[in-house]
Length: 218
Ligand code: SF4
Image (tube, rainbow, N blue to C red; front, side, top):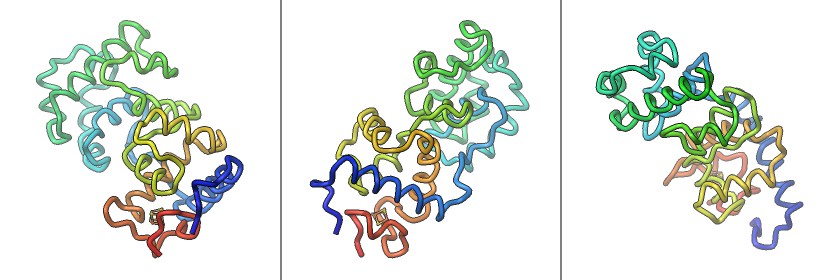
């Protein structure tokens, strides 16, 4: 049984390294499952993915990116029409306002180019740290950790945090994870949360981490 209370920072970092190594073996192809070409498209897809599956988003975006091929097209569209176009992703009115609002700011204040800093990204309407970190890491390759529901749950189960505050968890995880693994960790944990460490029914007996996880049920 792992005793996380008495674990030193060095031991925590070593255990995180082991977690990442094993997850790389388990999910060698872990990557963002949203389909996109440009940073703007990833931003739109990430906004759409809130409370919605990536599969559903990927069904909607081919048509959407054809109808709205540029930042300007999203910026000046009729918001009701955009809401209809993304209806199947849920929260369509709220998401349409966020996509149009963010695109308008990108067009008018950033010359049509999605900004590549946290400071500027979170100025965009509807964009919080989670979406911003996703765009920074996946579209720009800038080291960042996305704290989504899988990350909150699994980092808690692994005893790397006892917080539910995403910003605090982000800081804690960055402190114990090698910078070059920040982006990978996000994708690895999402895959692990979907396949093995599933909310409410984690498959601990099939989990490669069960001997280094304090919450293991085996
Ligand atoms: S051992 Fe169980 S609780 Fe721990 S990470 Fe694996 S599936 Fe999740």
